[in-house]
Length: 268
Image (cartoon, rainbow, N blue to C red; front, side):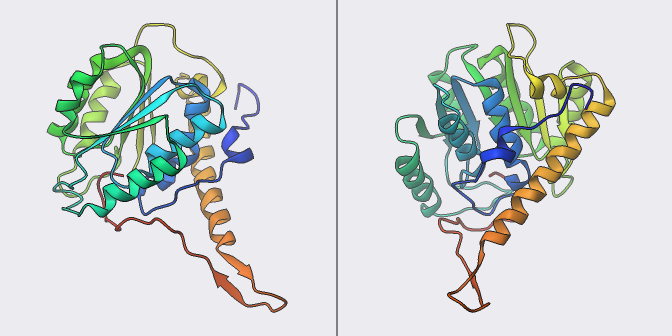
C-alpha cells in the first residue's frame, strides 16, 4: 500500500471469544481493527441475532482499552429472512454479555424504531445496520438512524453483496455510493459496506485513511488484505480445533460452545 506497511491489531492479538454460525465471520478482523482505529464512545448495532459482530466490537473495546458502551437492538424473534427462533438465542446473547462485557453492553429488546427515542441526535460513533435486508427495510433503517450518528461517524451495512431472495441491501448501498463521497465496500463473504458521515472532526489513522482513499490500488489491496485476514483467522481456528491426544497422533475435535441455531442467511 502506498501509505506504508499496514499491520493491524487483529493479526497480532485477535482471537474471537465468541464463535457462532454467521455470515459475519468473514469480516471479524476488520470489525476488530475498525473499533481500535476510531475508538468509539457509543456503538449501536441494529439486528443482533446471535451476536457475532456485536461481541467482536465489544472485545476490541475491552482489549484496546476504549472507554465506551455498546447497545444491541433486536426483538430476538426472527424475521422473514432468518425465520422465527425461540428465546434460547436471546438468553445465550444475554449470558455472554453478562459473563464477558458486564458494564459496557446494553441489550434493548425492541423494534428499531422504538429504540430511536433512547438516543440523542449526533450521539453515535459507530452504527451497524444489519436488520431485515430488503431494499425498503434498509432504506427505513438508514433514514431513521442517520441523524443519530455523529458527523464523522461510521456506518456499517452488512450483506451488500447478497443478491438472493428479496435482499435489496446491495441495491440501496449502490445508491449511497453515488450520493456520498466517503464510502467503501468489501466484496468478500456476503459483503460489508462502510460509510463515513460528512462533517465533524473524524478520526484519522492508517486504516481510516485507506478506507476512504481515492487511490484505487490502495483500496484494492485493503480488500485483499481483509479477505486474506479472514481466511487466516478461520485456518488458525480450524487448526486449534484439532489437538494431539497424549503421546499418540490421534486428533481431538474441540467444540465451539455457545453456538446458536444455524441460519442460512440474514442477520447476525
